[in-house]
Image 1: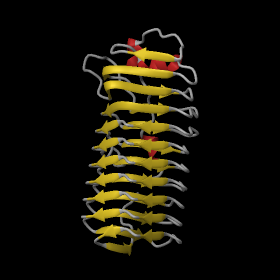
Image 2 (image 1 turned 180 degrees about the vertical axis):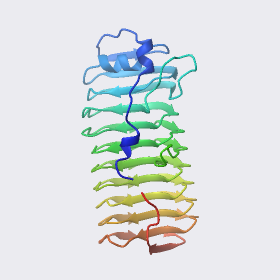
Image 3 (image 1 turned 45 degrees about the vertical axis):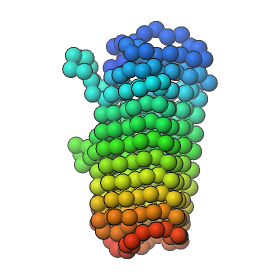
Length: 296
């Protein structure tokens, strides 16, 4: 699963540019159906809040300004399926933090039908993704790439699918040296590959009190990453494995998790090249070691 982002970024075409409404910078900016969320975000200054009001928005958003809040009030649907008469193409990404935008809060949205719903991209730090509902992503629900110190909490993520290139299908991904993130109390169901995947030397992350169910391969995977804490998660009905350590995963703490009804093993330590992993006070039925048979 190296360089997943390569298939997700290519075009950032904004439907919302076609419906742009002039917005002046202020502490609080309000967006209503028919307005451009992007225009409001571009007008915001650090410390400002963009309040998006109830409605359905066929738009993508790129955030380059740090220390702002993007907040949905009521039922806010950010839909990646462009209307047939729109005459434009949406981005593959629903909301993206770019250019190192940090200290951003994203909360209160229903994000559906994008390739990647929320992307915390390289250099962005200390962001919060809270209380969102994410459905039917054709790649990944929430991904941090080279982004550290973020809080991903209280989100509901369903139906993350595999892309046309045969990768993805994950609820939450921390990759490419993403450190000290907190993934807490999320509900992740029906991910085609894995509910939560920590990869590519990502360290010091906390995966805690998440409910992960019906994953197509594994519930939680720590792959080639070190010193992560996986604590008090509830992982059920994974098609193959519940919680997995892969390749050089070392120094990870797997503690007080409840893992049941996996197709092969509830707890699985693969390839046995990692050292110093601690499995402590977990509740499960089956466990095993062996070769990791999957290519990612």
